[in-house]
Length: 468
Ligand code: HEM
Image (cartoon, rainbow, N blue to C red; front, side, top):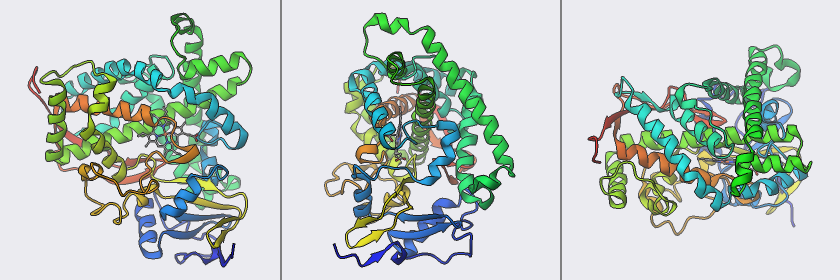
């Protein structure tokens, strides 16, 4: 291969001595705009330096995205993932090498369709509590979904994958959710501050001590969940059902393939990845439906076609599959507001792509948020148009990747789609969604998982008691 260039040839925005581009975005609310502007100005592969040691390429070029994500060897996560290590350890999101390979193999059967089907009942029962909570609110003019939905999705992941009821929606254990929030903020804040990015100076900052405190809360919560399951595990043993996630982990610990620490790290990882991402998806979808009444109307008529006037049907797997229009709505939501706006890989060796060499020790930031706003594939990219997914035949596979793609794609993708469909369809059957009053404008924040810094607010009007 003729090698005509290396990483140094990719365009680079002007930078400061020592800090490089580390000070360009000062907060989690600036990252998306700053990075989007880099892409607009410098193209689909942009070189950045964050402090003296951290070099990165921001990539939105789908050919290069395909090259990285489809590879069976470029699987190492970028250096910034280490900021989550005190919390998630070597769980599947952060794991590399043979540890990742073994654990991915052990855990894949826990997301088999047969197991997911058994979860539908729980999606339904937890969803009913969510509806009751919405009905009991005093102010329905401006409801902050972000304060409610994560509790619901936390109940779902605990009751399904972990086999443990934690009643987060009933006010128990919400300290866990606020600690997740704080930790997600700290992970990104470390990236943005020269003092916090280096281990040797991090201890001088307040976040260092906050991190210690919240990690303790997070770990003692997951330890409690594991202990709880260990004691009532015999129930599933007797029932002869396929093993769900935590029981599968415990089985592998019986035969000494997994240590107690391995188990805690995977429970921490799945508890986080399994609830926060889905909550974000549900919140943004409901926000978009509230602000696009004609789309909401179509979602409602699909529900009427499936269930008539019945607001509380026991929804089957096939019925969820048949919610085609709702599926386009969710896909379009995850296009505009991907729950994971950026993912990263680290190149351990010089890597050849076409006629270029990207040098070793480069961090590759795959900017999903930017990839999803490419007008070549998504005309009028800022607009919410679910119908664009109806006849999408010319979309290259790596131009739309809310769940990533390739060997390290999201293991919970099917779980997430079923859960989001179940919950959103239930809300639509019970409520007419309206824009919040007073008017609410999102302030997007890249906090590991995509958030809105001022909440995600909508108005609610209950549909008449028995009819949709
Ligand atoms: C709307 C919901 C979700 C979205 C948008 C989403 C997105 C993603 C993305 C983009 C990745 C790749 C991360 C990376 O390369 O760093 C990922 C990985 C992962 N996701 Fe999800 N996810 C969702 C729901 C879930 C659920 C429900 C679970 C578990 C029940 C889950 C568990 C995981 C795990 C364990 C990984 C790491 C996989 C590996 O590296 O082998 N996710 N997800």
